[in-house]
Amino acid sequence: MQLSSVLSLLAVGTLAAAQASNNVTTGKLGDARPVRNNPVIGEVWIAEFDSETVKGTFKAVAAQIGINYTIDITGLPEENGPYNYHIHVRAVPENGTCADTGAHLDSYVRGQEPPCEASLPATCEVGDLSGKYGKVAGGHIQKEFHDPYTATNIIQLGYIGNRAVVFHDKSSARVACANIKKAPVSATP
Image (cartoon, rainbow, N blue to C red; front, side):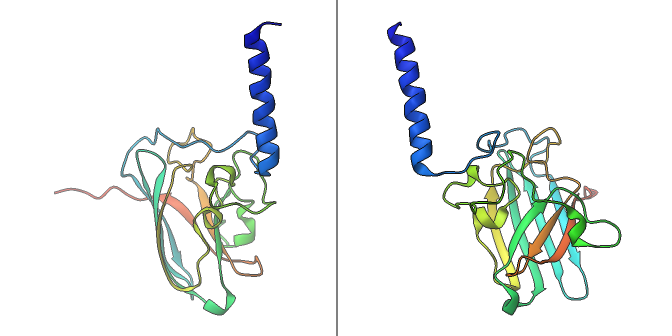
């Protein structure tokens, strides 16, 4: 056996042992990869919450890598928090039922268990935003963060278009949801 083959086998064995000892859960397709090809940098996508109790916006702005998010929502009762929030695979149907939004966006087939480790966001479900960037308490929620693994490019595994953002209360019930839609381009004078 050549020395290069032996070294390759040692490297693979060392990598496998390191992964096993870290107990890091990655998806069946590996870790999420940063998105570098959003079609229009600065393009805005918005989910508007306008129920009797929950109002506000969940805004996504395409960046050079991934998406910049801004959450500005009121009406989630603080006593039912903290709230998880995720991007789900299906849009909210016309009847407004959050239960019909499907599972979390999980492009790399990771699953929810064990829970996402915020210090290793590439190992989390792509749509598990609260797992990566922290739960929210309720009341008036104002939060900004950048996620490199979500996309506005339809060919990417982390594509957010025609999907829903869903807030779950402390019992995991889906309590608020809204569709993520491309914002109309403002007319310029």
